[in-house]
Each structure stands twice: as C-alpha cells, then as structure tokens.
Image (tube, rainbow, N blue to C red; front, side):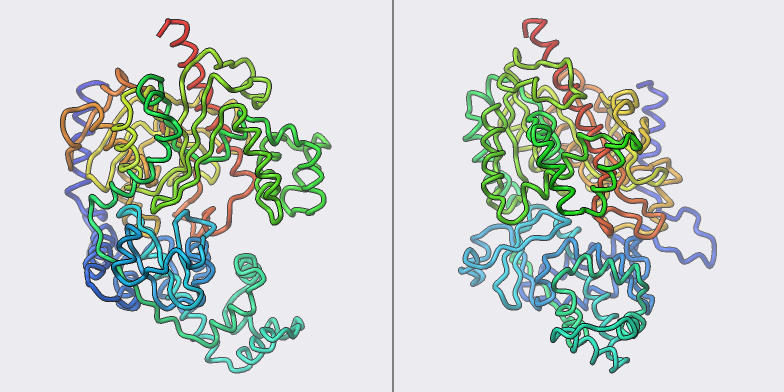
Length: 600
C-alpha cells in the first residue's frame, strides 16, 4: 500500500474517532448518532455493576434515545413486530414465563450467588443466537456471558422484547372482546375468520405480521397470546460480577478439549489453517454425506412438502432453475438429521465424517462455539463437492481448525488462545454475516479495511480473496470486493445517523467479528499489545500467514427489517455461504499443495 494511501487511512481513522456520527448537524436536525448509542452502552454497563437486580424498565429510556435502526418503531403505538421477532429469535422461548434473568461468566459465579442447582435446570436455546442458557422451569433464566459483546447483544434484545410485549399487552387491555377471544382460543376453541380479525385489529397487525408471529411461536401461539393479554412484562437483570480475565479463563476452558484431541504434537509440528465460519458448510462439502443421500433427502423434501425446498427441487429437476442441487441437499440435510427421533442418523453421519478425519467437538462451557478438527491427509477427494473437483490434499500434513463464528469480542479471546497454543498458523479465514449499506441480502462482500469500534483502530490488510475467488460459484447474489467494513459492538447499537456517518466515509459493511480477530492477530505479529485509536497496516501479516475475510449480507439496515435475523435463513442464503466455503477450501488446498511441492 502506498504511503499516500496509508496517510489517507490514518487521517480517516482519526476522523472516525474524533467526529460525531452526524457531522455538521444543521439546526433543528435531531437525528441520533454515536453519542446516543454510547450513552445506552454506558447506562447498562454501569447499572449492571450493581450487586442487585436492575429492572429492564430502567433501561428503556436509554433504549428509546439510542433510536436503533433495528427498532425503528420503538416509540410508535403499533407493535414493531420486526424488532420483536428479531429479539424473540435471540432469546429462549421460555422468556414468556421469565421475570428474572441472571448473567454470569462461570459456574462458580452462579454457585457463589446461590444458584448451586444450575446444572439440574433445563437447558434452553434460542434459534438466532448461540448462547448457553439454563431455565429453572419457572421464572428464572440464567445465561453464560462469554465476552463483553454478549452484553451488547443480549441487553438491547431483552429491552426491545419487553417494550414490544408491553405494547401488545396495552393494546389488548383496551379491547376486552379481543381478550375474551384469546382466552377462548387458549382453552382450545377454534376462532372463525371474523373473530381472528378482531384480535388482529386489536393488535394492529396485518395478515403478514400475524403469520410471522405464528411462525415464531408455533404450537405455543395462543398460550403466549394469553400471557401477553394477561401479564405486563416487568423483567429484571442481574450480573454476577465478572472480570476481563474471566473471559480469557472461559476461552481457555473451551480450548482444553480441542487441545486434547489435536494433541500438543499436532499443534507444535503440523501446519494449521484456522477458519471461523460454521460447522455445517465445510463438513458438507468435504464429507459427501448429503450427496450420497440424494434419494433420501429428495424424498424427505417431498414428504415434508417444505414450502421453500419443494418448489426449488421441482424447478431444478425440470431444468427451470439454475440453483445448485448440492446446496439444496445441504439445506435439507439439517432438518433431516436434526429432526425428532433422528439420533441414529446423526450418529451414523458423525461416524462417516470421523472416518475421513473430520472430528466434531461440542462446547460445554460458557463459550458456546462448536469446533471441528479436520486432518487433510485423511480426506477422500471422491466425496468432495463437485466444485472442489481436481483438488487432492491428502499429501499434506496440514490440519484445519474450523469453529462456529463467535460473537464480537469472543473472537479476540479465541484467536488469542489459538495463537498462544500454536506457532504453526499458516492461514486465518473469517466468514460471517454482515449488514450491507450498498448491496442486497445474499451479496458477498470482501473488505481490505476494517474500522474496529472496540479498539478504535483502523486496520488495512491484504485480503487473499477477491471477486474472482467467489464469483464463479455465486448464482443469486453479487460479489463486491475492495470494500471497507466497520466492526460494531452490537446489532441493536446502530441508528440512522450512525450508519449515515459511516456510509459517507465509504464504510459499507457492518459486522461484529473482524476487528477483534485483527486485534488478536496484531499481537501475534508485533511485540506489543494492540494499540487503540490508531491506523494500523497489517501488510506484515502476509509474511507470517494467509489472511482472508469474507462477509455475506444478511441485513440491509436502511430498509426496515430486511434482515435474515427477523425473517429466518432461506435457501438463497446458502448460495453465498457455499460460494464462500468453496473459495476458502480451494485456497487452503492450493497453499497446502504448494507447500508440499516446495518440500515445506
């Protein structure tokens, strides 16, 4: 990178740090920006330092003031169902019953606070966010916090959920007839169309919103509506202490079983390629598990009459759709293997993958991040996805360590732990979701500049991936390289002014992990801890390891609730995921082959 470009980046980095998000705000323009978001973060951070519980309602004023782009309708009387469903997908379904939420870093923290029966509580989960939850079956929900980003993600989600719940409660209390109908439906009575219309109109919901709410609540739909009509939400939060080093200890505990399986000799002597992505796409493309079950999976699609998969299958079989059949089989494999009473099929799949060197490790502690260890020498190229034809990595002694992409600052702690455990890192590849300010959902964005809100640093680096890396495998979306990304603290912690400011500075990718990863990599290259509020050239990394960063667009925050988080991941989202996965594996195999050819 030229000295002129470096100087320009330094100046822009300083501008990002020193200026408010709404630069030169004209008189009478009251749009919110960074100040309001930072006020919100300081509010819940300081309140949670209290040794007692804090009412969620005490955080609502700061939540309103932040004016989150994901909760644009917070102050409107009409329920913002987009924000409600986004939050509901990130909190366990038992939140309907919950009054008290307890947050802690370790089991010992919960035991010290009197929650010594936590391990016997019911495990809870949320479809849109990996986090370890425990429910006492009544009114208490406990969550493990793996990094500061968990608070930045979780707190606004809980506040938004309570705000929207209470809106609906208020609306229903004003219409006794709707309350009565909901109680009757909760008792098992079928409501006719006219009665359903009364309830929908009372809630100010249209047919689409009603269907979406039903899709999230499922069998609990009427029971949950009874609870909304009956109870005003007054949840409280309690943080059980916590320290910065506590996050590091949690990650060290997470890493221990990985090190046991990989063994010290592997970590010391064999080249390692680290991938932060997910635990399905790489395994699917390398194992051939789904492809070999073509008949079973297509029959499964027909039997379940899946509203999205079946039309796509019929189009592909009729030659009317250019979508990838392999991607469709991968998409069907998840409900096929993880449906009820499928434990035997899952065990069979795991055995097949282990036989060719793909080992899965499920998380057990505070860091809810799954791991795969993949031995290139044991893979079978005959089972590979057709897009990997011609690649044979079996002569290599390299290992891929692939993890479920972590949330925010957890990436920093994980990357630091891996850097401590091995000096054999040859490549680091980050694949994750992001919001796009200039593209569409499903587009792939390749950045070579990242501004990190956690450190205040602007990093620029040589991204090993470009347009040509992913474009040949992308059917529905577009590939956009030479982009600039901003790593934000949370999905709710952005507003229109905030986003406008970054967009005017040509930052078009809004994500949560790249900055922390780059901060940790800085410390693996230089003789000091990463600085703050600086412009940093990471080009020296290229002499140590290969670096690639890929994001696929899951949100368009300028358009209210055009987000996979609110609507759910569709088959079309597989297009960008697998195009990126193929690019990463091709890169790793090429480098491994080059190393073998050079006798390294």
